[in-house]
Length: 277
Image: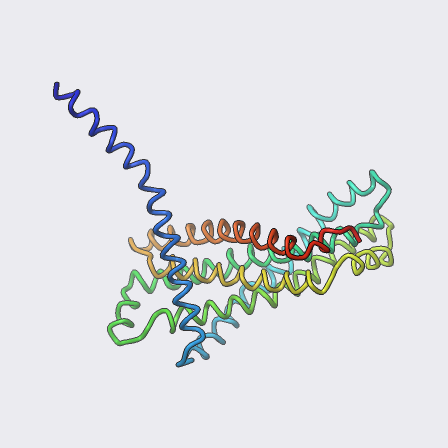
């Protein structure tokens, strides 16, 4: 009798336990969105006291990420993107269309994604570790006691610096990504003339602007997620390491979801981009 009476409670407890991870995820997403809203408000309202920290963070990320970004852009565009694409084009005798393919691949998706991967992996992890270490040492609590707003003094400069640096890195990713495609074309005896002819025929100023905007928003997503995980870290050094891993995973998932919405919205509002040129 006791076992029969306890069975419903056991089932109820198990079902509630299965929903706990989803509930925690939804709550965390809501807190990240609230933090993003607070950060944007504090970034555009005075006082603008975060200038020195903004410059320091900008130079910090630039020193960390410029070389990995160049190597990643050149290596991935030459290898997986270039060699695989030219192999398919050879089947149809259309190697001279490689430039047009790279205009679509690099400008729309490849360059922003490379910037997101490098910034999240290099700068995002450093930001999470830095803020997480301050959190577990209770330095952030000391700032609050002294009347210093952690959002304005710590999150806003990192938010703005990552938006700016990812937009600038997108230009370099476009340059070196295109260079990787050009090297593939030259190796396959296609020549630079057909490559750049189809490249500039396919690429448009609208796509370039959309690429820069999307990459800047990638930087904003990375900054918000990494700052949130750093500010909420707990459990000592082990908790900081866990927060770093979670920050990268959540940032890349958020970037994937945002990329889908952004791309679909862009193509729906500008049907001319889907036309073959």
